[in-house]
Length: 521
Image (tube, one colour):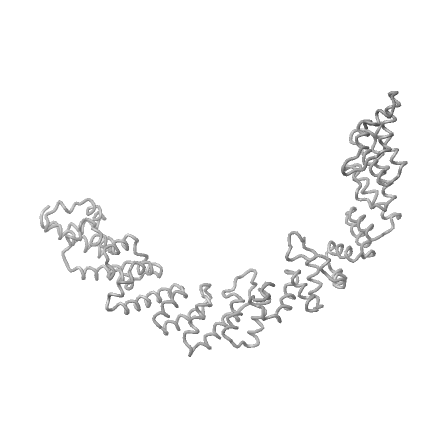
């Protein structure tokens, strides 16, 4: 290759994107020493024009193609050209490879200039600065000024990206009151969720001359504007945070602001926050309003407050009804039990309460007329088991036509469609027990008979005549089955007369002495 071709080769390689491969393959060594320097310079020039300054860094400070040894020119001027190229072309970040190269080469000054003279974003800027050791600033006569330059640049970029807390940190470090004012004004008028009350507070208290005005501005920002549902939309500043803010700084609120703040505290606070050593421990005047607001959502705690304060408003009824409607095992900290509610409040809670709640109240109060009424309502809904249970609990007559129809329906269902268990019958419902016995006996002696249930029912009633009927029927089906059943178990009493009946009957049939069989039975 002739000497006249060399100056243009760098441009050609760069235009085709082949310069890095050319350097990496060691192609420079194929040229005379003088031409190598010219070629390296040409490639560097073209790369800087094209904005590929990070490759130039790799060449000069990272040894790519050994261009650092071949570069002909002023190194300080080259650094300035690198910074200029970075200013003109860097839109995102400086690669980690470039950072590592400059750190390894201890080019801290170039890192500083790249960080503070380019359009890097805040995070990228801080990433670059993190690679500059503290010693660099200590040893540099202009170290203090450079630190201020860093904070100024970082603060401006953080502000542009609405990273307000970071911006405050940088501006405060250099006492930049002008930018702190700009930052405060921008943040206070913004709806951005990045606005942190701690950041606004830090700016407000940093300048005594504007402290009161700025504290009022912070309060106004929060306590004005359209109301939101705190369960659906998160407020930019938490209510309790603002409440403490007002208390700590002694901000004087207008009547409207105070009403708004207290309303939000009542809406958003939890009961425990009024306890000793908690945020609202000294705000007991808000406890009753809190309870009134949360009567339905927190009925247990709200009702306790009502009782403690002697409050008798409509919210008492709402809390009782809501609390009794909850299943206790699923809502341990919200549900109410009837034992926790006073009798007058239980009586007030009848009206408008769900059917199930009225039932619970009636049982607690032993309200017999109400239980009978609830029985009739359950009967209309086809809930015959409830209708029977409420009627019995209400001491309704067990001889009338009303209860007879319900009882017959239930007995018919368990005998014909179920397993024959009639444990739902009240112990004082003799007519029902007799009807159930006859229905069980009427099932016959075939497979799936209910004779054992009939025997157990009559035996429990102490009705010897009916018990004997059941014994005989069971014996006719299977003597061994009958004997085993009459022996009883842990949950069923032993029927000695039944055992004697079976033993004697079998002995008579077989012509043997009953005593021998009885000893074994």
